[in-house]
Image (cartoon, rainbow, N blue to C red; front, side, top):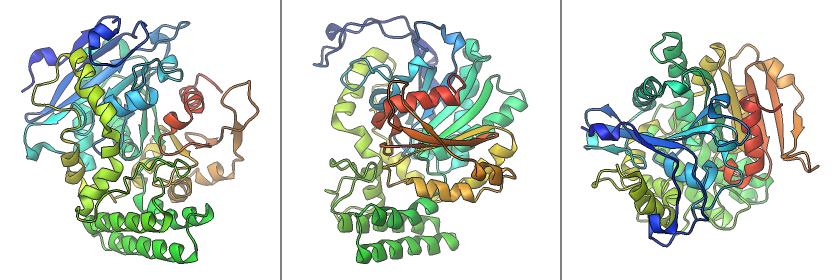
Length: 447
């Protein structure tokens, strides 16, 4: 069990300094935003870590701005680490203030999810989540505890934003949360979910890889044929409901892509530094290859040193046996059967329940390409899909001072789609200004 003092530890307004960290990380003296963090035991052998930042806007109190829950992907990637310090939190990985932090527009709640991710931990192997249902059940425990103990957020507009596999989890969590709010078992003003470069339909993503790489000159005719052939094998496995085999074939398809493209970056095709770790050796099992390509790079040395050093010291509540990211591989492999299953029907259920759904995607993402996202959206059974499809998209600009198109958006009723230009898989990291503008639009602060 988790000691009681872990359940709700609140920090006052803190002044970070070199002396506070004494580990070589430098930070300009600045006052941190108000924060809180803690652990919630979700089962007898598993606990999840959360970290809340109150909105930091000089013109508005946090009660005048929404609350956003951020869910990272993987599964096994840490929102408290990667999402926080590499994408949307108040400080970057060098502990310098981030100009485009989302705290300007909302309070942000990071939760290391599923169990075993980041600072969250499992006490034994039976505690790891194995499917979307288990992930959702654990998150309901955390959200119920959070809103019952932090009543100041019960009447504030609440949104879930996500990235990658986090989008698949976010859809399921959003639907269950909507039901809980309707049943009055959780008190909050849940207003919508945003699915960023999300693994909603893995098969549609995989089938798009060949055409996308061919259209961007990363494949020739022969390469296109090889990648398409690999994708069809995955399709056949899915049609036969052989989900674990489909995951293994997914790994082989990525090997074929790396061989044909000289190691294209799966997360941003124009970024030369590969996130996909083409140095992965052939002796590794397919699941370990997938883990190294899609999770381990988010636990890169610099961030790992930060989270297991200065941040751990600051938080003061991380159990000695828990290493940030130490259980990530187990999280990933335990979800192997679930990887290739789609969640299109869950999005349909959200739309039918009149929950606001936003889809956003980076133009330069390969692993979850935009054309793959468009493909699953076309499969929705939502009665208003035709009206949505008939809408003309609108050009967006990151700020009023530029005439360069930064994105396009199309919306109808409770569905919206944002095409983010010059961004890869991690939209806020690549196009911070446009991502912040999108947040304000989705949360109805900017139109």
